[in-house]
Image 1 (tube, rainbow, N blue to C red):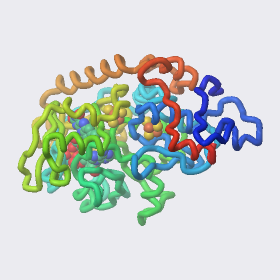
Image 2: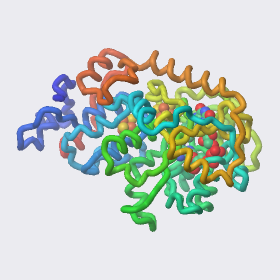
Image 3: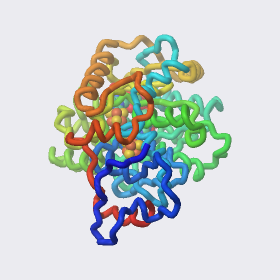
Length: 412
Ligand SMILES: Cc1cc2nc3c(=O)[nH]c(=O)nc-3n(C[C@H](O)[C@H](O)[C@H](O)COP(=O)(O)OP(=O)(O)OC[C@H]3O[C@@H](n4cnc5c(N)ncnc54)[C@H](O)[C@@H]3O)c2cc1C
Ligand code: SF4
Ligand code: SF4
């Protein structure tokens, strides 16, 4: 679909012309959508949820991750293939349809919901019941998996989670707990594999992440087998909002806390708690007070439960020290059964709380999303349709940041 109703391109350096046409020595086929279109509609418009689906989807590795800002950025020539647009859950990917696809094809008739905790040392270091850590460690030791893409704390930036490919129980234990920022691990999969001792051709990995990241991985697996191929198990962390790292730090400083002194954060039942290195609580605050640190694009997300994942885990509906787990697919059930020695499992305590939060999440998305919410709609949302829905709203595309225009002059 031609992107012909785009805003005019800023020209701060006075070079003239449209940067999209600078490498246009062949006639542009209809249907070209460039990374710059995604940049304007999603990233500059402050709607990006840092899922990294665009990075994983780009066939020419033209999209990288800006190390400083942790956002997608153009790193080499864009061919206008439109795949970044097609797989972005805030623009071309109708994510609610992706959730339905899983139901059609792989899901159990009724998802199984449990309260669970690890039987071993993961219980002590996990965010809730240590279930994710225990499950993945068990599967790796049973040779069911070669590794898992998780998050571990950055060595230089306390509280920031960065993507990490764990291949042993020890590494998983060291990476246990929640990082309340996006890691963009889906976009770093190839690099993580290349830096590991695993064979990228045969490796079987689990991917752990927020539901939006799992939506991207599932859509890539469904529509395009190449980039997401090493992923053989997906685990979603239940999520109503993720945070922008620097803004989260500033919000904590607003409570007279030094973020560098905080060992662990926890968000449960609407309360954000912070703990120091001795495990002492140093803050308990309404999580709504941290709204300004949240990713604005999360408002448009109706996928609290991570419905595109094999397994989802959280804490809502269970007692402290326990993980709520939802087993959704045959693949997830197989993994759950094979790891059963490492888990103590009972019925979820308060299923109605889980359902209430999922309902609230859906209602928020429907109220704040300018486009229609249509689980039965086409999976792809054309550029023009997106513009029709978003133009004139407070989520409309923003012209490119002048600081970035040089990239487009060079690469688009
Ligand atoms: C941004 C965010 C928001 C959340 N919001 C909610 C919520 O509203 N309600 C709710 O019930 N639960 C929420 N959770 C999930 C909850 O915090 C726990 O992650 C979950 O209960 C699993 O606990 P566990 O003890 O079984 O996992 P653990 O054994 O502690 O293992 C967690 C695994 O997840 C990995 N991980 C942690 N953070 C990230 C990340 N950002 N990206 C990728 N991998 C990561 C860790 O490396 C580890 O491997 C959220 C998690 C995140 C990251
Ligand atoms: S929301 Fe995800 S796919 Fe869309 S621009 Fe941001 S990182 Fe890329
Ligand atoms: S609320 Fe949705 S969009 Fe935001 S981080 Fe969580 S899963 Fe992603």
